[in-house]
Length: 460
Ligand code: FAD
Ligand code: NAD
Image (cartoon, rainbow, N blue to C red; front, side, top):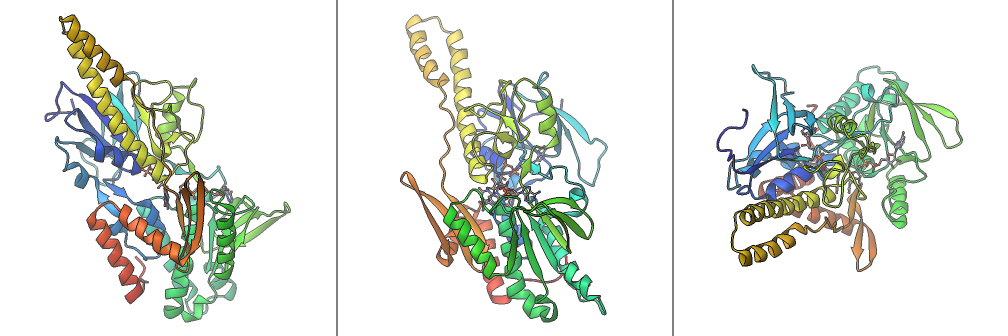
């Protein structure tokens, strides 16, 4: 069997899939004295996604916003098994997961099967492309560390190629046209970072090209940032106009080719738009392993965007599978805030389940009726697990030129603010929310370095 000592056969085993916001938050809080815990994730680290857009232009270094999963598990009271592998299949009947080593280096064994008593699915989501032709082949996404690295390399490649001797003027224009598809927070924050890089660094190092670089944001709806309040949407759109970021709203991308995209404009007409770099940020859809699991629960799992769960994060149709974060489909938005609160909640829920099991065992062995009644009353309380309650702390987004926007809950209403002061607030919130002192000091140093020395423009 793959699970050897220090596994305690007396304890139930929780298998946690993923090392993102939801799973890491669960891992931080879970009591390992109560369970055997196994983590399976294709990346052996946690990634602080809110600062990922900053990595695409080198405002912040990637190493500053990741934290190895083993840095977290080493603080637990009992050993947690961490496997760098992808879960390829979930078998809810035999209660096992199949895992595969999908890294470049292969050993003699590349797949394994792990049994679970409880399974927590925190695998996040993948990029939504709506099946639009050419997106997978030609566009770049912004979800993982390697996405940010690819964007940074492609950006510098476009600029250097545009500067090649005797480059045709229309080719220079194409290479220096950066298109962002999707006006949600990811697309907006990426466009903002790109703008800062252009103004603060490219004008110094590529003065002959900087004036020719164009940023275009394409959004299918009538405005960007649909989840933010109206005044912040207007503020962002006005601010983008000032920063020469062109927004095309009510515009749909119909097809993507290697050097241009076909768009459908608000009046229904089609047009071609040449590009050098295309970043695709049109939201989430569920991962293949989740889709595969859904197909095994046709009666209860019919929502494409994720696993339907009850108020206790338990997957509908199953007693022992839980889903959190972007892998789940609930009334909450797919955000880090929601995922981390759900992870923390599950840690409490599992403690209560362990206590329940313990009491049930005790009661079964009891002969004294009075003691039994008292334990039964306790058991009734323990069985009454409170449902998950989400506490919204507000929404923040960076919009370029040292400005940010914030929608913050206030009493029963909301306070909206935007500008440089909000950016100072944005920075302090992210700095304090970063995972560790190590991350905090690295990010603070990166910000100072950028202000004093500028960004590094070398191609990776
Ligand atoms: P993730 O954090 O995506 O983690 C998924 C984990 O599962 C990863 O470790 C992955 O490697 C692993 N995995 C994938 N496939 C498998 C598999 N088959 N088997 C096992 N493991 C697997 N939200 C906010 O609230 N505020 C923000 O400012 C913010 N900024 C963002 C900026 C960007 C650029 C992006 C992309 C997202 C941002 N979000 C933000 C959204 C937030 O990152 C997500 O909602 C959050 O990451 C969801 O957490 P999760 O644990 O469900 O998934
Ligand atoms: P999103 O779903 O929030 O936005 C995607 C946008 O793309 C939508 O506005 C949609 O109308 C548009 N779109 C879809 N298809 C299109 C097409 N064919 N052509 C043009 N536009 C199209 O996606 P996201 O921005 O990646 O965010 C995902 C989740 O992560 C959200 O819940 C978001 O709140 C969260 N997030 C939060 C922050 C933050 O708080 N600062 C930052 C990034 C992401």
